[in-house]
Image 1 (spheres, one colour):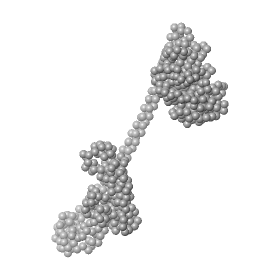
Image 2: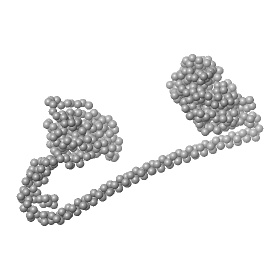
Image 3: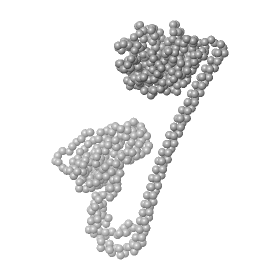
Image 4: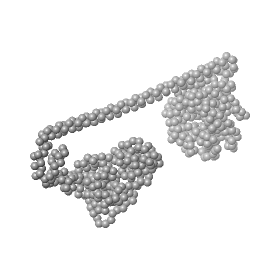
Length: 623
């Protein structure tokens, strides 16, 4: 804001001319500016700001009275500077009858009409009125200004200043007409004689007492008499309206009564309109309440329908499995079905406050990681209880790996925490990745962590980064290691890495989207994909074999168990809330476990038992 202060001899009233900076919000436009006059005085009236009409800014010579009476360029002397957002970008003045255009910006209605062929200065769109901006009108109506009869034109005729000898009142813009219509400092003309000098309203009564001019008291009934007071007495003796004085008086009283009655009726109508508005608002609230209730009922109905559909799907899957098993039994297929190897749920671990995303077993301890940012330690001996809750991550625990006497946990917070299993204490925090740690694996003294397009190799003892393997095509969500190789899964790809050289020795191409899980048996390599499939390769030749189909959701986890009677079993956990048991001898599903109430996200196998963690926040034990 640039400001120029007046110089010269001190006077009780000073003026300051300033230019308001360009407005930059949705209700104004760039490149606009407006001139004001700030005025202050010794009498304690404070600082005022005057919006100067456009003809004054251009130097036109217009009289004080004609300017105050002009409707379009009325004088506004503000007590405090208005907010710059209340100025029209087309005329650079306070909004007058603000209206919102089709492009969403606000201008004076008369400015839009006068620029109807032009375009919006903000977004260069056609100027078309949509609706009045009531909010801006109310805001402008609350601004305080000085009575126009309390201002005078400066000596140079270019600006207005506060005249301390005239009206001292400050009023809201919305009330200015009411005040200025009754202001004692308003200029009036003598009603008796137009030749009398101009008066102020407050002096009119005293003037009429001394004024010798008079006119007929029945002038409002078109009696045109003008003269002196002596002539008025003679006129009344012969005025036709004087003879009707009583009738005129009764008529005026009747008209007054009718006007009073009309005013009461208008008040009653206003009251009824207010009540109607309140009833309309109440009706709107009831309609919204009913809409919300209907939406809630529809959501619950959809949830019930989904649950029913899911239950029917699980029943259909079980019926299909029973049908397949009966066919195999009838055909006499040996080893296809072992009635002694039916897995049943033996118990449920409850305690997590969110979905369980990862599991690992070490000795008699089961570790589970959850969305509640904790790791729970479960006793697998006779107690079957949670013996410890490990807290340290600031994000979801996504991966667990046990190696030696250490537990490694990876999280959404991009860190790996090393835990001492002996005393369950946090040993070290490794700032591992720039993205969430999705999976962990360990072998031959090395810890492997997978994240977005990268695998990092850490020394399991010193926790020092040994190597960073890059060039992977997507999130690395699956890592499995044996004594010779590391297997990693990303988008439609499994890469096999030599643990001696950490070089890629084989790439297995898949289909079905991202690889979410990998399992290694003595004879097979298996992976579960986003699109519900389990692909199988021969371990020695890497020749792709069958694709196991049956799940109706992403295969999140795979686990291998070698049994005495039934050979190798592979367990698959899926988004469809089920766990399937696959016989690797004949590549068929021998059982479907459907006890979880949410997607099954992780598996762990130990001592002939299967452990499953799910989105329903529980861990189940199968045997």
